[in-house]
Every structure is written in C-alpha cells, then in structure tokens.
Length: 88
Image (cartoon, rainbow, N blue to C red):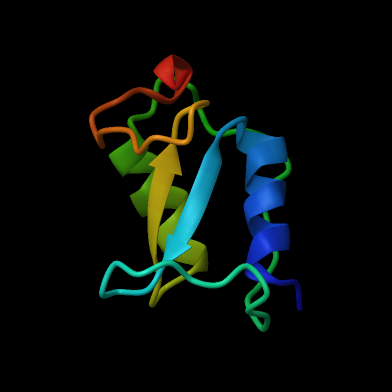
C-alpha cells in the first residue's frame, strides 16, 4: 500500500489540485505514513462539483477516519463552497 505522500501526488495528478490528509483532530498526517489505499479514480471529478461535494463523494468514501484540506495553487486552503473548476 502506498504512503500518504504518494496518494496526495496521485490526487494532484488526477484532480488537478493539492490536498493534505489530516487526522480527525485537524493535525497533518505525515507524508511517509503507509497502509492506506491508493486513490482509485482514473478521471477527474466533475469540475462543477464543490469542494465539499468532492470530499464527501470521493475522499471520505476511500479514506474514512481521515479529514482532508483542499489547497489552491498557492497552498492555501479553499472554502468548501468553491467549485473545483475555480481552484487556482
């Protein structure tokens, strides 16, 4: 099974945005943590989805027990109402 860092990289490659895995208490998960499944999607989500919808439909389905922070191109967290097509 891959590391968190490799899964984050795969999400970036497929979805076109960066994410940070978080523990439920909001602290960052170390990139070298392993034992989690690979990101299973080969195509990006619908760009008209909100960040919140993506988290519920894709992230939480594959990574229960973790939270996630979606980041813009400057590494800043984006609001849950942001559409995926507007992440810049």
